[in-house]
Length: 411
Image: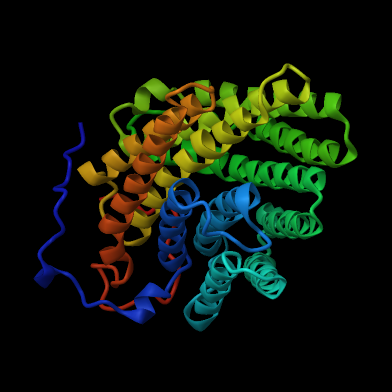
């Protein structure tokens, strides 16, 4: 059993002074913090002050947009801006360019809360610029390094940005049918990207952390899974519901088979691993529920959306923004009580939110409870990681000139 660290921060005298250069050293630092803060605020606004989003993008459309593109896709950008450096040896964005990326993101969040079409258009332009800049920066790193294995990743970021733009255009036109179609397309593109990254990093992390553990790479099944996910996106736009259900079944079924082959019982003593396993299983289950919905099984759309978004993406996110931040900050790859508590809170929030989908007198209370646990989870993450993110790595005198590996060597 790994020794738990103290939940208390280290003495102030042992920490380096905050540094703008360190904060803007790599994408994960500002983007993880921004995404975690927005996860907290956006859910609190939606549940406790739903009247605040009063602009063109309001109501359920605002909630769906901000959770998928404002939170989940934002964290994905932060991860890829950092992992891209490890894959290619070229840090995609740092310094002023990274600050511009964050400013575009912040402008979009504020603009979408304001009334008026001008604010909405400004938000759409800022959001489009955010995804375009991220994709261009990552694409440059991949092309300059001739990293052919990752040529498709910048295109997936562009796909996220495109589905975002289509969603916003449908919102402005008041076309609810198109709005939902583009939301589901964004959900599937995000799923495609998540499957690609998670299938690579989860087995790698597990084999490095658990002595003697060997798990298959699943190269062939992984490619079939990605193809099925891409086909699902095409079928969604084409309106081929039977083929859509089949493609989602293949993608979800492969995910669960991979999960079993990764021997989840071997990682139960490693919170940094089991949280990722839980999220990947949630993603697979959510895809199968989406397949059932597409096949006309009568399951509500909100069920598979929340299983994928909360039980899949969000559980993976709280694990990944902990694991990758610790590694890139030069910290021991061990959890403390605040981190494990945050994991438990996100899982508990997911359970309560899914329970609230069933109409009952307790639904409102379950919803409020889920929102409170969710907000507390990300508040804990911010409390624990903000002091680290704004300071240089403790093993360096200043910010790194070169990106470090996404899976640092353990001592």
